[in-house]
Length: 255
Image 1 (spheres, one colour):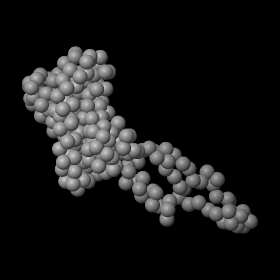
Image 2 (tube, helix red, strand yellow):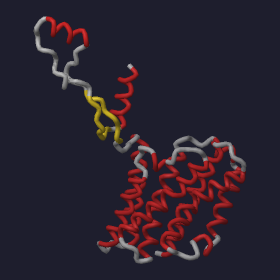
Image 3 (cartoon, helix red, strand yellow):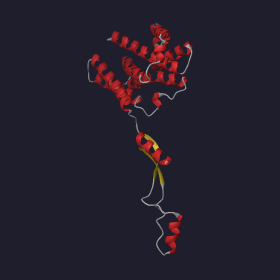
Image 4 (tube, helix red, strand yellow):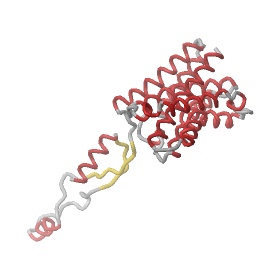
């Protein structure tokens, strides 16, 4: 079991490091920039997790193999630069989804090993999965994926809850890991394929059924008719709407 977790961790480092290399290539960084983005993506989340949990030394200091794996990933990427540069734009979010799933399970597992409560384990899985990517995107001057409307952190939380919940039910570790990976990866890939997003808070303009103009109000008063109800006026409220509704409202405002 320990060996399985170790190799899953290594696989996550490779995938996340490769996503850092891809962003570095698209940002026209030099080899050192590629190495920096690969390193912060591959081991950044786990480093913060160990610091929060009070683990000394952090995992890559105790086992420098992680650093050699990152160096090898960057070195091979430089050799095959032309192939990396031509990768489809679909590759980065898909690779990031695999890394997110792997690191979510790794983070939750390590927290449980240290006898942390279940809710802390879920948060550690989230931190391990998203922190490195956030630092990567900030260094590349991009909006971090976790701060967008996309289903990203939600997928990590769902995977962490699945892993912790199955562990509490006494499910064998291998099955719990597989199901947690499937939940996280499935939600993230579904969000990529169908462009699933979370609802957002937005200012919504609520118009009355009929709103008369100033000329119509004056004409109604001069003819002895009751003036339109002054309460029938445009109101602005904050409501939670879907991104599709938000785009539709923007289009109406432009029209």
